[in-house]
Length: 486
Image: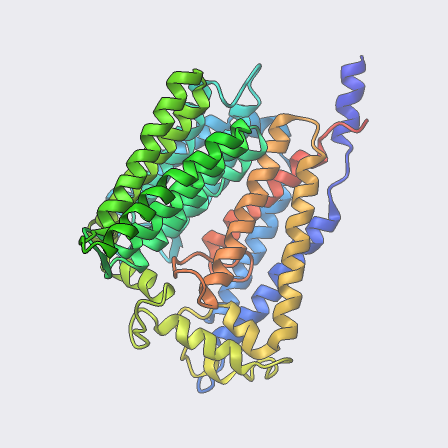
């Protein structure tokens, strides 16, 4: 009887209209900006003309609203019950896409069915989120149990590998953003720190790879010093051991100082060898601490040091042998290693010109010259933010960004108020995906991140992305509507 009353009370819960309001506002503003971005001065189409991008987006908007209504009506238990089945179906669809899809702009990620083009990778976002929520909601689930950690890792990495095989690196990185969910659910901060450290190693290793320091590059030299500093910091943070922390820093300093003194005696020093010697000494000292103190944390920190060095040594191979030439050039342009304003840097260069020309208040709706004259490629899809910047200026851009920040904070609030692990995990997954899209899309448009081709939620043109974001959001709203009120 009590269960029945709770269930009835849950089913009578209200939808979060505040979040729905954000959704409707974003979709409307996105539609208007798609019209502005695709507006042709010579062959202008009406706002509702289905032959234009804005008209087609209107069709996607209508179908998305119907989809949203349907998602709200579905029993919330349906999502949890069939989450894994849907995930497996999504994986199968990714494999089929990889086998049958045509190459479009270097990517094999689009299924063409008559006049409709769908990108299955967009729908995997909510499927991965649902599956993670289902796994975490299992009885007695503990993330750091080896078996559970392997399952969660496999759930995320399997679609990542398939999407990378389709040459959709940007979407694969979106999936990896779900590590934020794992961090919320008990993943030690060391894993997140390791990921951030890997990014720093990659940037330094590539950016300064052309300058030699003895037998290694300047990038490797700088990174080795950073690895030693990170290693000492981990000792202090996880073991609170001040003396080992100081020794870990002072041993390499002593090696460098001894080498520097030898230069005054006429000895030729290979500073690359000295850096490697300092790193090796640090590793030997960690092994000594582990044997003497019998504390596993010293072994884990040693593995971090070794893993960091191996990752550093693999950076150049991955960059030159794994990444495609256009991806290499995009990274070089972002890191300031190349200009290439007529090639890989053209998109970003024209985008920054468009945004900068908007000034403080913008040129006004449909008055953007850079976008109207089609200087900015992909200006109604991945680079639609440059249209906002040009026509509405700093004020309009800031308003859009603040609205997105408020929206993501609202998603986090919804996630935290869930009364089930399933709802909370799914909510954080949704917030992570939207946050990643926002940061990376804006970052690549203004030139501080590589161009990896991911849309701005609800603003970029495209049915697959709009459907994907709609499903992602309204499943969360349905889960929130059914949570038990206490």
